[in-house]
Image (cartoon, rainbow, N blue to C red; front, side, top):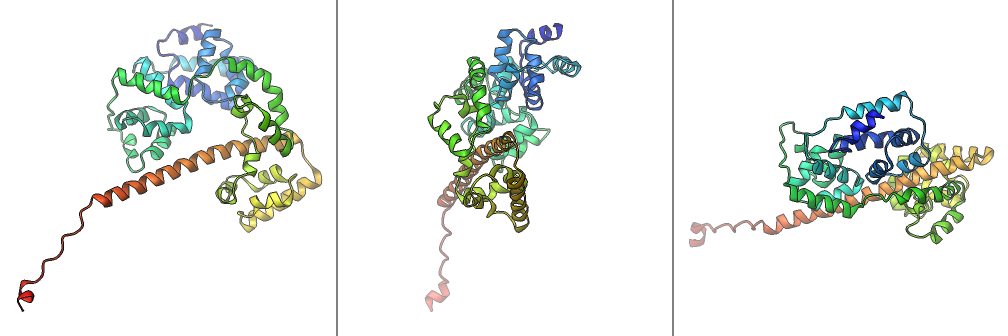
Length: 339
């Protein structure tokens, strides 16, 4: 296909915009992504997969759809992406940082601030602003200033930054695709099992098993402390909690319903009673449990990062107060002293 040949002949393919476009497609329609990737050579397909940030690419590669007019137009749009404005090495660095996800915050705090701001200002706004706010509270707004001119690091610094990003999240190995094919049945089975069986399977599965990487277990949400759940419970509607929990004992459900308002608790209990009465497909329960478990992983990461930021700010305040000299003692009134 001429469009694919034009893309792969570009020195900076895939650049950041290419990867963001493909990843957005993967999240919307993994089959459409798979259809596009089948048009590339095996070598280029593996190169694109190695740079992908999430598991939705695996589903698309293993179960590709069919190229239609919409996916073909997306490929044509990619040929019109801006190219050549920066070096291929800089574009690689941006892709490496983008795919870090929430770990980009840790990366930014550990690199020189001028390099961090150059990267942040080059990322998509939806990513750059979110990472900047958590990385540099109180100092991030400059990336929104249209007059802001970041100081781009030298080539040797870019290479060091690339190495650091890859150390934090290595490129995906193409062998993951075959492992996904092998574990796909197990992943589907896990969406239908009860909690004790889920806990047992995860307990005996090897740490490098794909189930740990691709499907966070729901039992970890059940094991969370009540304090940790009080805020998280409010992130999902009552009927979704009811679907995820209705088959569990009342004693386990109460930990989730206690933080709810009276109105939400009423809706939750009403939905639980409905599911207990009419039942539902196990796959539906599995899907909502997986959705909640994924959100809980992100919630834990965000909570840990917020705690780190809070501790850092408290430490800075203590340091500032320690170096501030105490006020000089007032001189005694000489006339009063003489008297």
